[in-house]
Length: 445
Image (tube, rainbow, N blue to C red; front, side):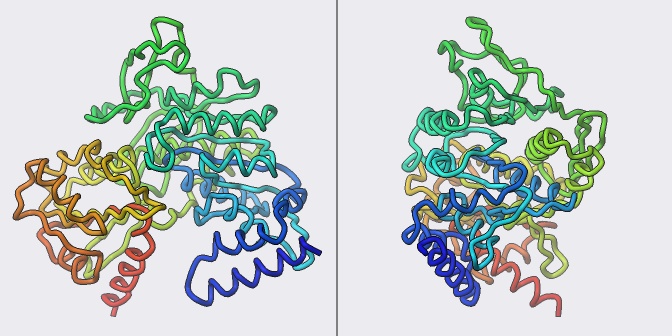
């Protein structure tokens, strides 16, 4: 009876949340867990083929939803927490949302994004058959601590999934090192030197085997690149899924396994996400043409280079939550040859991380580029962001300290730039998107 009561209570909470205009992706699962703590293990038996878990600091929501699109394109039924609620309660909500009132789940796959710190908790109740890990960067210091702590969490989770297939980003030495003692591992990466030459903080400078500093032939971004340890021989693995013939003119495209993929996405980092999804799908035996077709049908989630048109001007909206993802956003902004106005939003609520000292590790100096006509800072820590830009020697007459309101966004839209780029961290995501949707609708009339 406890299982059914948990399901009914969760479904009522999901319906109530939707009536209030909320996602209802986490709280309903929390209610169910209080009633029936092992509800997840009792529901997961309904997955007939594979349970895939997607972990990593950046890109896991995009990768998870690319996998979902590929699976559904082939006609599979999939349980998925596609809005990115990736702790235990969010995973439970996804399963109950897919269940009948009598507690039956019948699906081909479960495709589950998981928070790196919570994966070891979630894996007490389910065991993924395949695990995809995108990358590992420093993120929310007050929550995760140093990157070594995050890796310890992941290794603890992997100890519960010894027979699972690992799909790892071989270009990231931190992620690649996780495959050392795992018996079933495949790697993806990009062997082509993309020549980005970004001035960034590197996380994985030292070999995790022996502590020696890694030597790089080239960097792609962050610590991703072609590396080797001269002391113990640890080196970038040869990727089974190797992206080549990379093009990033507006949208990105690449070749893998003698097939060509045109992604409806901007940003080089999305090639890594697509390679991860491709590798997983190929290992599931999905035909290559169906994988490519699925990737080309992918539609970005909220704040993942999402595009709006306001007063005839393109506004590009992106989520960034740590130095690596902010540097990716900045590189995308500068890759745009047109002039632009930029809005940067920083909150320090618990989901964002209360410590914003990481702002000083972001290469905001690049925004001195002449193509950037103005910068608006917003959010709880708008003044901190303004100070950070001031220390980049960006003229103060180009910086406005404001808030994510219609007026602030319209000031950017009415600015000198041909396009507008808005980059925010997590708790500004949905409120900003709502404003953008309202403005887009208002100027359609």
